[in-house]
Image (cartoon, rainbow, N blue to C red; front, side, top):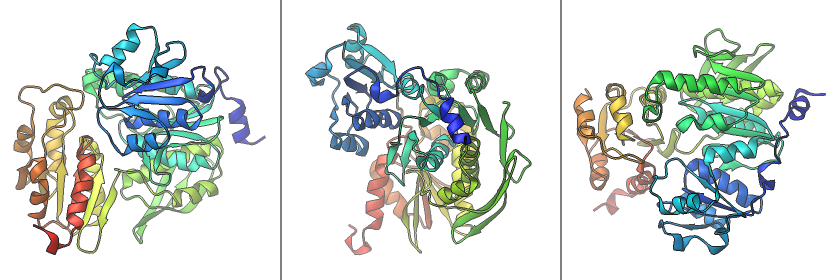
Length: 467
């Protein structure tokens, strides 16, 4: 019997896979969120009646509507389809980002509906599967997407926190024996999962609005690691016990002989029992080599052959908003990235310098959350100061109310780059065009992800069409 067959036989048979859960109707409060929409896609693809609310329309909600999902954008009971108002047949799923005074959510809570957080239903869906879970404060979306791509040929179903370019989706729909999930530490969500194989990519302080301090965050990762039934894989240096992985350092899984050839990485990997040479990987930045190595290690432990892993890594196209090229010409480059933590900003800057070592680089950054800006103000300033020019947008509040004194002006005052400026959305195109930088990076987790499309369209317009 192969390792893969042994692993499947060890799957936890607690509940049937999610498509067979007992509810006929699934209603999502916050359906447009990246994690929520993956689950909504899953249920819709498996024949359930799905509907939901979100604050604003988006490409994600449009694609869900094309699957037959009813979505509205006003928090009002009149908008809920009548067939979803039977509390015996309807499951309600919500995201913790929804405010506590949300009318629809409170109606469901007050009228004896079964109401579950996103993490709870993901835990129920995957409980009966052999579950491969990717955790970490940074890198988990890319790593889980790489792993999902590798495991797609093993018929795994993958729930991702980003849109995988190969599939143009945050859901890779497979069969019901194996699942790949992004294990999110926000709101301690990953503690609802039942992982067989897991990895932890990083444990930098984040979400201190939830955890209070880094010690509480670390304790949560320890608790997650204790839930892993088979094998835990960790980036070398993390305060956990498991198989380690590293680039150019001794570890159980070691990537070495890194070279850049024709815009891609080529490297070798040593595993605990073997070695494989000349792996090709197209994502820039050594942090992405680490992500690929983590996915390789998980797939290897599961039982996928190294030759198959090598072939699948070479065809991975990336994740939208993770160092995504929106414009790439001889004269100008525009890169879009979700980076919203100092560590992530540093990783993008390192990647840009690696790919474009002699070019001037402009960063447009939209801070995300008042609390995160306050908690890491000096680290943000240090990371942004590494760019040649900085354009800083107002803080995107997301789920938060303003905090006195915490604003983009304060952050700008700490940035040491000489060419720095506060900008507004209405002035952004003009300010970008006033720069002589050849490389532009737009970073942040707020609505800058929507703005990037308008910026791209404007910058692609021929000069003669400009007003």
